[in-house]
Length: 478
Image (cartoon, rainbow, N blue to C red; front, top):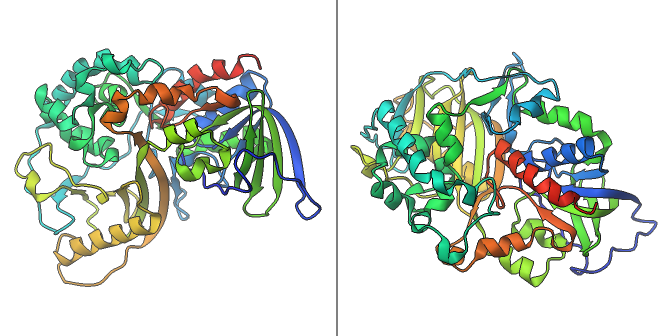
């Protein structure tokens, strides 16, 4: 689910570079090589190796597994807070995966009760927005679920059954705001947006089918009590991926990226570099599973065919960032939420355009506040931090924080994480031209399979569910 920065070496599609005395290299032979140790890649690696007895190598650019989990550990108390993934959807056999690593889970929530302050972060003006009652919101979401249920198999856990262009329901391609108005579902919008819908930016303007990948069937079930959410009882969400790392041991190549490749219909060959030591590893495998977002940078080393390159280049993304800031001037009773002034008094379909800071939310730990930043396709980490500082300055200088005097103060970052490209989508015209049929033609071509949000949906346990459908295809003939 995370991006994997890669450097291309040599000509695309060329054979592997000759290893000289100045570039010592190991050669590994494996059944399957997996690129990316986030939710989908780590899960698939465990299942393929431990349950199907296949040799694997897992390439991960970071020095830990888990991608966007982002568990913060307080150095003084040992308390944890998950500022990335905050809970898991209880789909399929998700809890059983935790059980195999002896990690207990609970549905209990320890989040503090907060007062939501609606503020236009661009001006600092208080927004007198009056959301529908929680009962009205839940009722609308239940109705929303009834409307969208017939389309579930078209979009989740993947696009295997996505209809041919002439059979796509019109409602999937209209802007989400128009869709909600058509079915009288506006009352559910604040909860949809504030939980996961904000990941696509201005939710009202995005095609309905892509918002459903951000807030869809399972989130609606969770909000209406038809599906559970859970978290580990100790150690935070990172505990699972630490256990996976221990299980996989030396089959994980950390701090590493692919620099060159050669893929055929019978095998793949990769050159992998450890960016800390410079060590090169050659991997020869019968199958490749790509478990990172297929952005231009990520797939450059994968000797793409023209069809692969042209298809993947049509995707666009949101860039998400999250972090924790420690500034005592924030009021620990508040959840500072960014809405445009035009949302007042009850315009539920009005949202800020990205890039934007979505919120500053108290975590319950001392003075730590979680920051959510939604960027566009080009937003960088430094730009996201600058945007957060700018929004903070606006709140500070307009008296929206605990202090009333004007002052200069820097955000004190306790943690910051770049979630990278997420919520992959294309234009409505591309959908009508058969994009998803073309995208899934990539599956299995040149011994390569693809998983992750661009081929499924950005929820950890839903990605595991997608992997469950993909693994038998990978194993065919292996």
